[in-house]
Length: 178
Image 1 (cartoon, rainbow, N blue to C red):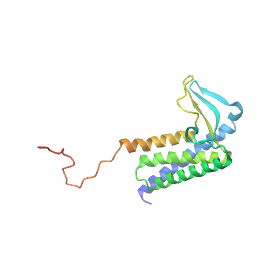
Image 2 (cartoon, helix red, strand yellow):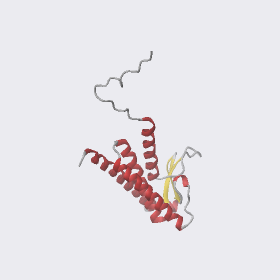
Image 3 (cartoon, rainbow, N blue to C red):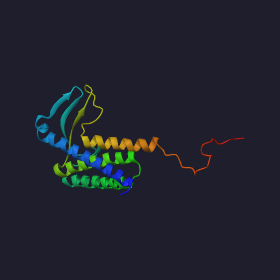
Image 4 (cartoon, helix red, strand yellow):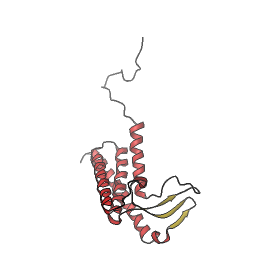
């Protein structure tokens, strides 16, 4: 196996770890913590566990109001996850592999929720007094968001310099104008 494939396997391992951590926390929320019954647990002055069922996708958009719409969302998000998986297998740069792994793991966690329950389990409630910078979210949502930021930041700010043939000094010296 080539070194690049070891790196790609690292991206897949990251996706698997995100998926497992997301599902473990959701199992705790539904099980021992009994969040659906108590509705809210204050952990810190700025962070609560708050029970929410998200029937939509990103920011609650495209809400699944019927069983048919639920399965359409499962299908569409599964197709997107497949695209991310193929992209990860073709990627050559480690930071992008990490971002794609986070996106894939988070997507799989939310797809599993929607498949099992018909909604995504959300619980993380970050707030500063009455101001909430985010809607209530979960670990999968956070991983997807961080992965997207990594991909976008790399695409916008980390452009690769074009390679010049060895022995060429033109690339190192500014062009002269007369």
